[in-house]
Amino acid sequence: MSAILILFAALFLYGVWQLVRDYFVPSVLDNIPGPKSASLISGNAAQLFDRDNAAFLRMLKDTYGPVSKINSFLGARWLHVYDVKAMHTILVKDHELYSRGESTNTSTHLILGPGLLATEDLRHKRQRKMLNPVFSAAHMRNMTPFFHEVVGKLREAIDGRIAAGAKEIDIAGWMSRTALELVGQGGLGHSFDPLIEETTDEYTEAVKALVPTFNTLGFAQVILPFVKYMGPAWLRRKMLDLVPLQSVQRLKNITDLMHERSVEIFNERKKATLRGEESMLNQVAGGKDVMSVLLKANLEADDEDKLPDEELIAQMSTFILAGVDTTSNALARILHLLALNPDVQDKLRAELVEAQAQYGERMPYNELSQLPYMDAVCRETMRIYAPVTFVLREARVDTKIPVTQPIRGVDGTMITEVAVPKGTSIFLNNHACNGNKALWGEDAEEWKPERWLSPLPRELEEARIPGIYANLMTFGAGSFSCIGFKFSQLEMKVVLSTLVRSFKFDLPEKPITWNFSGVNFPTMDGPDKTKPELFLKIQRVEE
Image (cartoon, rainbow, N blue to C red; front, top):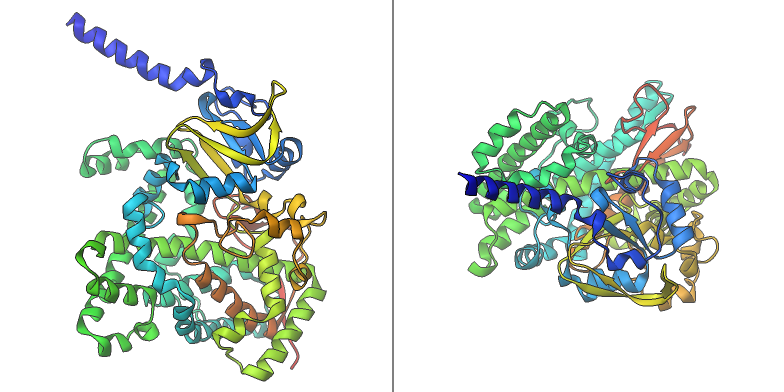
């Protein structure tokens, strides 16, 4: 008995030591400059992830530069990075040495299943190989007519609200409904929302509530990744049902609903695919949606490349989560900026009216993609106001990260390579890279679409930003970059080409606040400052 007690005591002390060891054990990262810890328990984490973290991130950038150390939970040291050479090493050159982290992967897997956002290594490569063709420019050309059809309904809906006397319209809400319908039809071959009619769809509300609900979990977010170690699935489920936190139960219900609807839609798509071409032509989007094409390709693939049904279903929830909030909030941001800058709005509208006269009401993919001023407005918004402003990585092994310019260490030595211990978390600040004055010039933090109509700065071209889109980090880089960025860009341009040509957007009476989150979102002054909404004054454009 005494031996068992000693063993349990030793295990307990070991567990306690693992929790507090970072407070006592020195780290090579201690020589990297950074701010003092703001809290014994959470370090700088509360400042880093606060809804209003702009001042803290600006201080990090202005005071410590492209690489700095920040303190996280229980004494852990993190790196804050926006150095181009370091980002290229982490995301592209040595990407196999870094993961999204067990915490991130486990949480995502629990919520969405084993899709692109929750897998790594060979499993992730196999999924990406299967998905790449359905997100190509060639496939986007097939999607364009369906996108125009959906956005035409959106225009009718807004026009109807104006005719009914609405003074201000929640454009964030309409962008969310539209993005869900575009992803539904173009991604899943399923219609969620008629748009013209007022509807209260349980699934639609669940999708919109997922990210805000996850953000309310608080400390439960830290515990969530450890759930997978708590026995078999049925036991974990029983334990989850007993958790007395409303936010946890709401997230569970949202996850259940999304999974059930994904399974239902998947079975419909799979049956249509097995029935053949004629059956698929009668479906939404005529069988050209991403999931229908993916199912057909999966049936024809070699055994080693086939994806199991579990992974295909997970991709559906992943499409919805990754494609709705990001694109809808990006569109809401552009329309807000156009209301703030009426000269830009007028110039964009003039380009669209001229293009419509030349190419017709529903512009084809190539012509729509090549409108210079619309492209400039989209790129500049994605540069300064990307919906997702950071990514996290975790070092899998002890490694080193080179930097563009040497860093002066706390001890005064010059550091050309940052030694990174295994397990170190790295906060890659895409927003800071996109607004780096050393690359973009002194006006880097200003929203100026015209900058894209002239040659870009030589320093930027020479820096070789590793991002997959327009010298920006907005859609990521390397093997984990956003596979659906062409889909998102098409959504944005079809919506803008229709709405800006038809309506004039002005600022509302109440102020608008943009909040930092996993996906940045807008709120209005009022009793509920956590509800995503953005009201604008909207008028018809005189023909």
